[in-house]
Length: 473
Image (cartoon, rainbow, N blue to C red; front, side):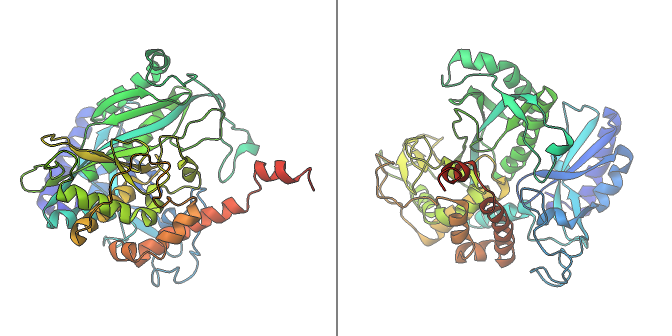
C-alpha cells in the first residue's frame, strides 16, 4: 500500500524497481488507476520518467472521475462548486495518481512495457474520498480493528467472440461507439463438455498463460453454458489483492483477445442470440485476524457459526441498497430472473445455486464459506468488495441473525432484488448506512453518475418500442 510505507522504505523500493526496469530493458511503463466504473485509465511514460513518477506521482485530468459509462462528463465542471466544496474537482483541473510499487508487473503481451497500479489523490497529495481503492482499504482496516480478516475467491464469467467487423468507419464513432460485429467460437449449450472446452482451448490457453505470467493465481478454466462463454476461477486471496487482481484480469482478457482478433466482453447480458447472462460469484470466508482460523465452520451439521450467521444476515439486510455497487449497469438487472441459476430474491440457501447467498459450510471443513451470487462481472471490484465487508461487518456488530435457509428459491416469499438500475438507485441514494460508511460525498457522487446513465437509457428509443407502436398507431 502506498500509505503504509515509510519514506526510507519507499526510497529503497523505488531504487529496486528502477534497477529491475533497467535489467529487463523495459522501454515504457503504464501508470494506471481505477476509475469509478472499475475501468483502468492512466498514462504511459518512458522508462526514464519512472523515478520522478514514483517519487512525486503524475497529474491526471480530474474530469476522468466525473464521467458516466459513455465517457461523458456529467458534472458542471465550470461551476465554482460542483457539490463537493469550492474548487474540488472543478475547472477540468488536475488530480494526482501515485504508484503503488508493490503492484508492478511486466505485461506478457507487451514485454517491453511495465505496469503499475496507482492510488488517486488530490493535487496536494492528500487522500480523496473518490478513490475506490481507498474506500476498500478503509473497510478492510475497520474489519481488522475488530479482529477479523476476509479471504475471498472469485468466479468470473465472460464471453469471447470472433470479430467480423470492427466497425471503424468514421460514422461508427461516438459516445459510445458502435460495437463490433461478431461471431461465435463455440455453439455452447453443452456445459463443461470437453468438446466445447476444446473449441475454446486456444483462447483459454492464451489467457491462462498471460495470467500466470502476471502472477495471478488461476485455479480453473471452464466452458460455461452460453455460446462462447468462459469462466475463470482463482485461488482465494485477501480483498484488496482480489480487487487489484480483478481489474488487471479483466484488462488482460480484453487486450490479449483483441490481439488475437477476438472481442471479449464482461457485459452481463449482450444483445445477441442465445445469450446466457454472465455473473460474478464471490466466495467469502471470515477469519480470526490474529490466528488465521476460520470463523465460518459450524459447530454441528445444519447449524451456522455465530460469525457466519451474522455475516449472512448483514449481507441480506443491506442487499437492496448494495445493488448499485454489486450490479451497477442498466444491463445487469436483466440477469435477475427465476430459474436461470441467478438470484432474483434476497435469501440464502445451503448449497443452493438459485439463492443469492449459497452456504458451503460443514463441521471440520476449513474451506467453509459462503458464496454471494448477486454481482455482475462489470462491477467495480473495490466498491463491490467494500459493500460485502461493510454489510457483513455490520451484521456482526449488530448481532444479526440470518433467516432460515430456503429450499426453493424461486417460489419463496423473500423480498425481491431491485428490478432495475433506477430501483437500486432509489435504495442506495438515501441509504443512511452507506452515507455513514462511505460518506455523503461518495454516495451523492456515485448516484449522480448513475442517474446520468439511467436518463440516457430512458431517452433512447428501443427496438421494443418501435416494434410495439410504429405499425399499431
